[in-house]
Amino acid sequence: MPRFFRRLAEGVFDEEDLIARTAELGSFVDAAAVEYGFDRANVYALGYSNGANIAASLIFHQVNAFKGAILHHPMVPLRGLELPDLKGLPVFIGAGENDPIVPKRETDELSSLLSGAGADVHMHWERQGHQLTRTEAEAAAAWFKTQA
Image (cartoon, rainbow, N blue to C red; front, side, top):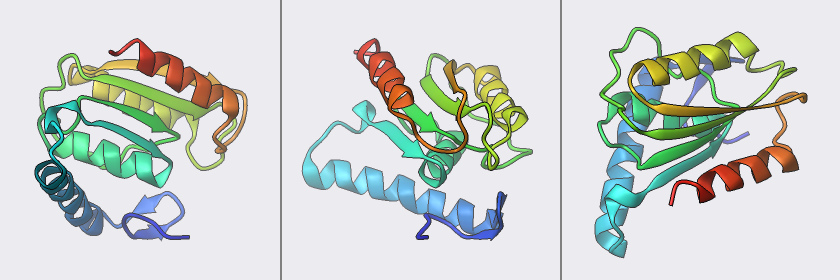
């Protein structure tokens, strides 16, 4: 399965590659804003699993990386970092209570890290596993509509 960055094993990220790919993503979004003429300050991240992980990594590394984020089934991208000031950053996290890839404690840790840096985190739990459900997507859409 194609991924945005390398893994060493299931749930174990190649941190050096993740950091490099995170920088590339930030540069890409910056360049795309210039090339396509959109306001960089209005970009929301939307990612599922690996996509949510690299979006979270960019939030961990770059001040004002996004106007907000919808992260479906993310993990903590890196530990031991001092997060930037995320005051008021709206973040939706969708997760599964029975997710075999992202245990509840991992999701709770990410939520706590983001909240601790000032983000306004909204948690949505499904009784499913790692799959993205229709009700989770609908909850994310409803949350997003409140952000305008």
